[in-house]
Amino acid sequence: MGQRPSQQNELFYDFCLEKHIPHDHLLRQIDQFLDFESIRSHLKSYYSHTGRPSVDPELMIRMLLIGYCYGIRSERRLCEEVHFNLAYRWFCRLGLEDAVPDHSSFSKNRHGRFRESDLLRFVFDAVVQQCQEQQLIQGEGFATDASYVRADASWERYATSISDLLAQRRDSRAVKEYLDALDSDAGLVSEQKRISQTDPLSRWMLKYGPARFYYCTNYLIDVEHNVIVDVEATPTNRTLEVKSTQKMIDRVEDKLGITPKRLLADTAYGTGPMLDWLVNQKGIKPHIPVVDKTRRKDGAFEVGDFQWDDKKNEYRCPGGQALKSHRGKARTSRKGVPKENTVIYRSRPSDCSACEWKPRCCPNTAHRKIARSIYEDSRNVARRITQSEQYRASQKERRKVEVLFAHLKRILGLDRLRLRGLTGANDEFLLAATVQNLRQLAKTSYKPPDHRISAPA
Image (tube, rainbow, N blue to C red):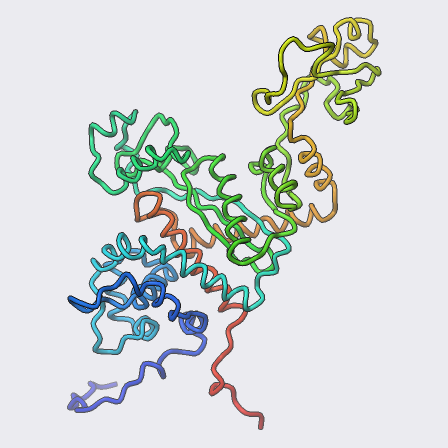
């Protein structure tokens, strides 16, 4: 042991970043599947040829991918990490003496050129296209689900009405976005007991622990290789989650030309309109549990104990009596759809009073009635599928979406948003899904460079 003698520094250095990045490094694997030529042409019209030199969009996207890949979502810290880390500099195509962009450039471009051109969606679609070229998307089975992510909003700062919100503040970007959604009547705004002052489109709800403001990320994945084929941000609302799934399926069909043979989802998606849309409009087999509110708790006969006659448009009870939606000549028109998209079928009180099955059929009423959904045929298709062996396998495959959500929050660190507004949430979810697909590409399709493959002895 001894003191290291001081030596004169070398006058010249020959340093190559390429030689210092291992060939099994995650960023090197991801880099193999990135193509920015189409991105430059996509953004060409948004950049001016006069004034100060613009920041290369490829550099900014590469830095953002690093941030979401390693859980660095503070743009100020991201710039510092890229400045110090050799692997980050190599991935961003920066030399040792090249300057790193200022953190303010991200905000200017994100709220300006990126959103005007929908660049982050374009990058996500380009990576999905790479997955399709690598044959990671089979298109046989898609799974969908939603997960809640906390919004960047304080639980203490809220308004109790829209007028109260407007009286307190209306100058922020998130509030203006809320007002635009209110004017457009897009279904994003609903009555709430608490409206966040900082991010009004987020929803107050009790999920994990104390009640907070949340957004919802909706995934549509191909179950063969867990590739996210589409992602959509919505406020936390079951109706909006179902509509987002329809939107994503249509978008995948339009962009990739793929319509799945079966869709895997939980009970929240087993509503009548959703099942009817899948079966009759898309020809997709719904591997989804049916939402059924007709179960009896008093031990009486259930709907399944009654026989349906489609030609006569009536039910037959175990006693052989008919349950009809109307009898005789109607005084008024019955062409309209009843409330909650159901038709009520009733038996005659005289038939029920003399029936021996009355104590088990309608013990507390004079006659029996059944509410039949106008989507009952599609619901029956889903019920038959739930009895198949393939459905039991689908229930295991459906959990692959939850694995991606766990990876999103634990590995990528996206358990709380940093950007506000629905567009901000959509930007973050798109970037995170892009990184997850890139990691899947690196895991399954990465090929080391040829010069690293040693020749056989």
